[in-house]
Image 1 (spheres, rainbow, N blue to C red):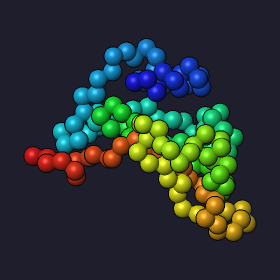
Image 2: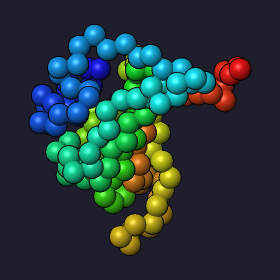
Image 3: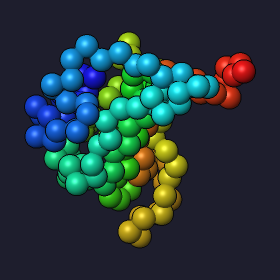
Image 4: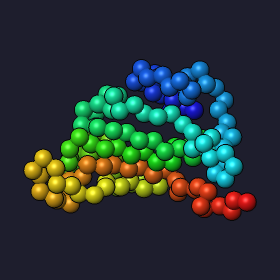
Length: 138
């Protein structure tokens, strides 16, 4: 899984399974009969979040059938959405491999007023979630 190798080379974090040594990965999961394998993928340790950017508190990765389905970022504090867009070079035009970008709810944090220009969350969705509830499991 390429993302595990990226963690290893870019952030000096070697996942115990998904790392640069793990070649020719093929997901053998099934949402009905082998859901653990279906959702397997590297986990991002929160201790490395600030290596990406000092404002990041947590990064969550959701995998399905060997592909990154969703990436969620939680920030330490509310931030201007325009600043988040600048940090991650996001525009209103979505890359080919991103289905949607969501900026979460507005939060009252550290005495900032609730304001639609602020958020503490960023979510990038690559494709629709497809789990056991979405297929006919026998």
